[in-house]
Image (tube, rainbow, N blue to C red; front, side, top):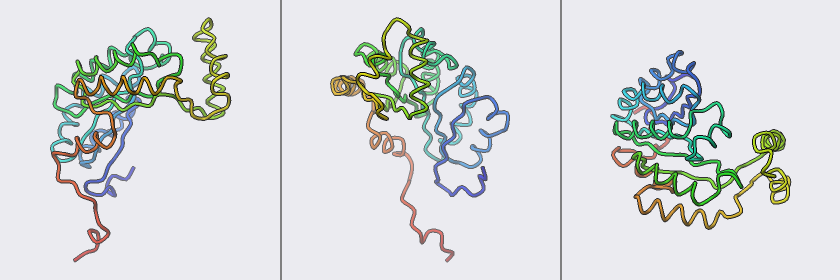
Length: 232
């Protein structure tokens, strides 16, 4: 990436998925560029890396909006080990979320995908919201379903059979979704309503427009015009 070409007030989305990003000095480069960091899903070491880089994120947030996101789709560690075997368990992610929030950073959860027949139950969704609130989350952005392209579908179906051999998930998926790309959970309307009510109760944002407006509130941001780049 040529960070020298990043315009002032531009948005840089950096997804740190392995220690290599930090070893290459990407976090320091992002700091000096003064751009927005968007931190998403973690691997087994990422939680520690994020916490180590809190000073960098705080430095960025002093001048530009910074938002930290952690993907959490189940509150149960045992289930998270099954569906995300190479990522930290959910409890560790909630702990990292709490650390980020306590540091004054605008942090929250990406609740996606919500896997049909696996994570689409009321207890799971409501418990995630509760634990997010306990961790100081400012927002939860959800998608109640999963998208599957053709090659992804074959891989996903094979994993369903190997991870949950006695649950007949494969039969359910084929019956309900067939070859559909977008697999929205069957009870999405009820779940979304319960989710929104619980978020409202805790004061947690869940609409993207509200999330963007909230984390930009403290900054003097405006839409750039073409004329801003014409020398006087």
